[in-house]
Amino acid sequence: MTFQNNKVLLATIDEFDSFKEKNPEIKYIDAILSDLSGVIRGKRLPINDAQKLFKSGIQFCYSTFLLDVTGYCPDAAGRGFTDGDPDATYFPVAGTLKKMPWHKDSLGQVLITIQDDSRYSSIIDPRNVLASVLSRIEDLNLQFKVAFELEFYLFKKRKNISEKPEPAISNETNKQSEGTQVYGMRELDEFYDFLEDVNEFCKIQNIPASTASSEFAPGQFEINLNHTNDILKAADDSALLRRVIKETAIKHDYEASFISKPFIEQTGSGMHVHISLFDEKNQNIFSGDKDEGSEQLHYAIGGLQKTLYDNFLIFASNVNSYRRFEPDQFVPVNNSWGPNNRSVAFRIPRSDEKSKRIEHRVAGAEANSYLVLSAILSGIHYGLINKLSPTKLRIDNACTDPDPEMPKSIEKAIGLFEDSKFCIDYYSKEYVTMYADLKRKEIESFRSEISDIEYKWYLNL
Image 1 (cartoon, rainbow, N blue to C red):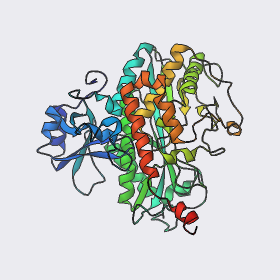
Image 2 (image 1 turned 30 degrees about the vertical axis):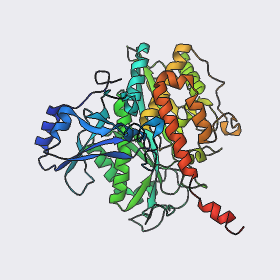
Image 3 (image 1 turned 60 degrees about the horizontal axis):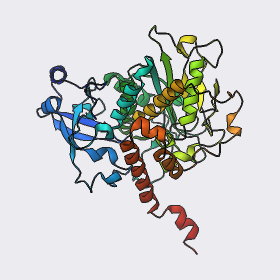
Image 4 (image 1 turned 45 degrees about the vertical axis):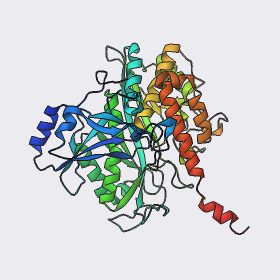
């Protein structure tokens, strides 16, 4: 299953030659991908050898997309050790060849994607899962526009990976972040140099970052991306923004993290996605006379509600993700919806009619942006074609009614995902099996280690 001629636009040798001519100082090209956990992986090619990437692709193992969060290959669905770990051909994505402005030397980077079915389906690449969903929903004859909002924490740089995180210390004031100063301007100024570099680096990489704000916890920030109708690029931008933020943090002697819940007593970090839908006359079909929007918007909400728990493994992809879903933390604890209400899963923000949209507030910040968009768009498609009515809207605090059916653990989410006819239909049986098995094996590995609390509680027995 390849998508080379179906929405996936590949970079040409002309794009490479033009980049090389404009940037003669470039020494290396990083051919990169964002794996299921958002970790950037790839190969560094000397500039004189990079030409072949744009002519005939690069060989890289299929299992790169089936590594767990530690980078280990757990042989998910027999991919890795069992099958001899075969290579696939990866090609560069058009428009993603850019300089790496944070690096101490002159380097470029380009996203790569699998376009090969010599042994397995290319669906193993989450970017291709999204491309497949986009192909599936073409029957609507409608145009989606989406925008990501990413929350993250800045930490004091740790000495090793076992050290617990602490909020960052401002290089301006030499004070550690403390207190809850949501939207605080002083907090933005204390980390102005870092945020300004993120902004400048995004411009160089053609990542449409816009608003930055301090969030609801010490050292927590949010950066928004502009709306776009280029759905694959929107997911690319979200994945690449994470790299910009993390690399820029290192440059400023911080550590950035998109973990859902680094501190029990503080709010978690989410990936909020805004979605609107336009017809052939560029009319927003979600617009209506009331704040809650049109009938089509209601069908879309109905689909998102119906498919939310089936997709929960995509929105909450690791053990820590489930700590985020607590009442009165501006995080949903059910599948509710409503206008201008941050306690629900699907919020309808206040806006003019052309900007009427759904804000999907479920995913954790560390979720895979390609899979998150796949889940959201397929859920909306399912609701529209089946004309699913949503539950009664909420304008009160929806957190007073936690839903007992909502997955509270990754184990339950794995079971719902792999048994879901909806997920198998939209993502393929092959992908559902691989992803579920990967997550199950990741949990098995997680539980094989003795935790600090086990020593704390039981060592004196």
